[in-house]
Length: 356
Image (cartoon, rainbow, N blue to C red; front, side, top):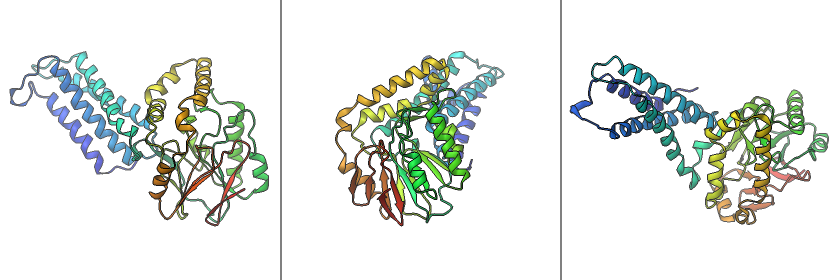
């Protein structure tokens, strides 16, 4: 974790809270009767949560949104509990369970409200993350591009492409399976076979990257299997004029999907899945897959050409790639890759994207 000046803000807020808790009354003799006292607790701890979010986002880019928010909520709740315990020793102050509940609620509410702008903007750094290596050992190698294979029981085209180009590196642009939830015990046999294939490619000295799409959930525990794993916007390779994202976040007009994207990658849903029995979690996962096939059809059937062109123009000087749209489209420097469901892979070779 890289500590930067952003940490001064949460430290200042935490110090202020500690100082206030050491006083027998608020400065200036201010009296806050219920429920205003609870509102003050929620506000101050909400500010602490937001400043912690900013500091963590800039110093730990490998933390997914759900892990970052869960960590912050745990820190805010524990600090609220310690603050109440501290007040126990201050004459004239009483520690109350309601104050601690307001502290925790304020942190949760602040993180929720602070994420609402992600429903309408292309500035999505707050939900984007990556881990691994942004540079391929040999950039001159072919880079096989696989977008949205939506594999089920069969990894269609994978072995054929491996045999055809055994020296190539690989980049998967999301939606590798119909649905993939990264909890222990929820991986299917094909998913385990894919991870074994990744390990074999890396053991052979090949670079393998995975950028998550809208059908992958909580896969960051598998990041060590890959040379690079990421999510959201901002995919790139150092020394190569290549940038990418999955494509599901291109269309800012699709508010329904944006809301689902935030909810489905939240700490709250992670906790729900972790508390579910394994069989129930698998049934819910299958239900999600069925719903994803048919929901929001109006936005799925039309390629958002203007939004795609605008996203590509933000990456001038590079070839900008997405998957997601299941159609091969080209707009200036932007390329939407074709659907790889039947083994239709592409390749990045000598600065160009070609059919494999």
